[in-house]
Image (cartoon, rainbow, N blue to C red; front, side):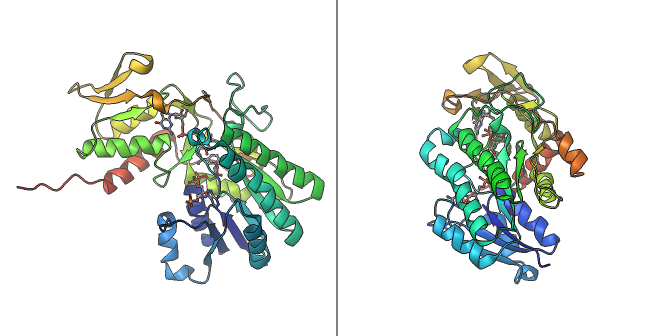
Length: 349
Ligand code: NAP
Ligand code: G4F
């Protein structure tokens, strides 16, 4: 049978890695992009411009908030698998655009599920669920498929709806619908407003003399950070099983934002010495004494998820999935990439 995947959010971080992965498995891949006033396909340009994918990789305009376009796309493409990755995916920004986040990250999921149910009910469906669902109960770690949910943001609340409507369509209509409850995963393609990429870009710019210091919010937050390239394989594995189910993908390791900062600076030979506490905490170059990191309350969130640490044992056992890239290697990959892109200014007379 011809394998046809439809990916919403194809030009996001995960969409770009998933496209590469599925094309390597000989899928026909249909990516959904929304219209921008400028072209925003940087993460998939290498696929678009690769002539060997000319008859295998297709882009279509669509929008998560527009059920007409989603239904028409399902009718036209007739996918065998749909990966619903598109979302307003920034937790901090979801406090600023809460209603839009509810539409794009929550309600949109039923539009896709209905479009599948009515037009291609045998199509398998992957929903990009998230560790943000666990949010507010830090005592329950490590978090697994059986940990109670307690979202702490408009983003988390919207994803909670998407999680349950996916379970509901599986149970009510016998659809092959799965939730991947993914913990944070990063890469050189990570959006620049997420903390890891913000850090690696800043360190590269500081080293190139293009930025003075890095300003951050909560340095104590702990995240279970993995590599996006590893996680897209897990998404695909979920849709290859005999029965649909929900799975956590995580590394089972957690690190503070402060540790990520230290690791990124270590990659360029700088040891950070911390002084002060709370909003007065500052990070200095231990050799030169130069101020490199400070705290700016504007990056604090109205409510914060303090601790995420995932238990991926179900996925490891049932899917045979295992993350390959470890924390320090991830920081290194991101630092190498950003250091290459951000070059020092040219010397002039
Ligand atoms: P991302 O880089 O922010 O990509 C999100 C994609 O969604 C972008 O391509 C974006 O398009 C698209 N999108 C947003 N609003 C849309 C709309 N109204 N209509 C159509 N497309 C729209 O996110 P990611 O890191 O790849 O994450 C993929 C999914 O996994 C998201 O649903 C995210 O919430 C979830 N997730 C991510 C993580 C993580 O750590 N990365 C962990 C758990 C769950 P534009 O490029 O046009 O903006
Ligand atoms: O990188 P972040 O913005 O990611 P966050 O909030 O954990 O969300 C990401 O992972 C979720 C999975 O758990 C996904 F569902 C979601 O789509 C997204 O991909 O922030 C990480 C931590 C937070 O505690 C934040 O408060 O870093 C803290 N932080 C400290 N200073 C900062 C900053 N975050 C950002 N973005 N920018 C800062 O300056």
